[in-house]
Every structure is written in C-alpha cells, then in structure tokens.
Image (cartoon, rainbow, N blue to C red; front, side, top):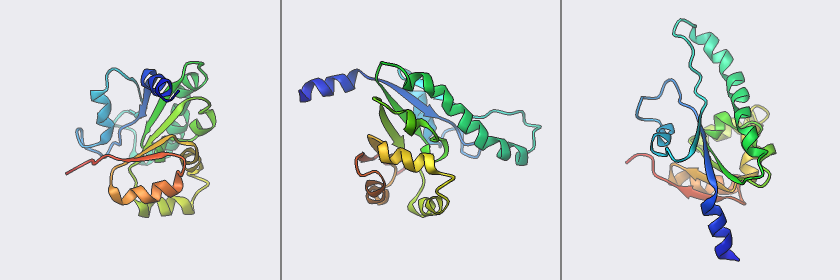
Length: 167
C-alpha cells in the first residue's frame, strides 16, 4: 500500500505558481527556480505594466492582480487528475487555493522571516488565505533553519522542509 501511494505521488504532475518581485534582481529571487523546471507546468503571474505607469498606481493594482491571477489555477484544482500545486511566495499569492485544494497536494515555499509573520498575523484578515493555506498544506518549504519550528506550529499536519537559499 505504501509503495503504491509513493508511486502515485511520483506520477503526479507539478504546477509551479509564482511571480517575480520587481525589486528583486534578475538572478537573485527564488522564482528563478522555475527556469530549471521546464518539465513542470509553470504559471508566472508577474504583473508587467508599461514603465510610464506611476509606481503608486502599480502598488494599488498589485493586490487585485494577484487575487485575479490565482484563478488561473482553478481549472487544475477542479480536474479529476491529481496535481501537486506549488506556490512560491504564498504569503503574497495564496488567497483561495486552500478552498479549492480538494484531492490535490499543496506545497508552499515561504520566504518571510518570523518577525514579518508576526506582523501578518496581527493583520490576519488581509492574509487569511495564506494562513488558511498553511492549515491544509501538505508540505512547507522554508529557507532558514530558524523558520522550521514556527512553520511546524502554523502547519502542524505539513511536512516542513528546509532548503538553504544562500550560502
């Protein structure tokens, strides 16, 4: 039984859901993992607006863009086929996916330090999708050993994995 479950999970197709922060370098952000995962379904939701649009307007549009972009995942979530849905930067992009999860596997690669998560918890209504996602996640990937225990508390049913991001 155990071997058949592992085999099923190995045969599941992965959807990588991500975006690039405008202020990150062209090679420094971990959304560039997608560049090396060409065999995966990659949904890049980076908002690309013309340069002439003022930054203050971009920042007002951005939260709506991210909420709207998540709907691109809905056909996969509603598929009978089972997927691994992997969010990079779920703190900024997970709104409704936790509700749609169903029989799929949910993986969250988180980048915020504990101090930022405390601030986000204080404004939980704004970040409720992320915190609800942690409650149903199958795996959480963190970038620092210091984050492991915190995410184990926030996502007690998930496997919390540490992958060093920088030396």
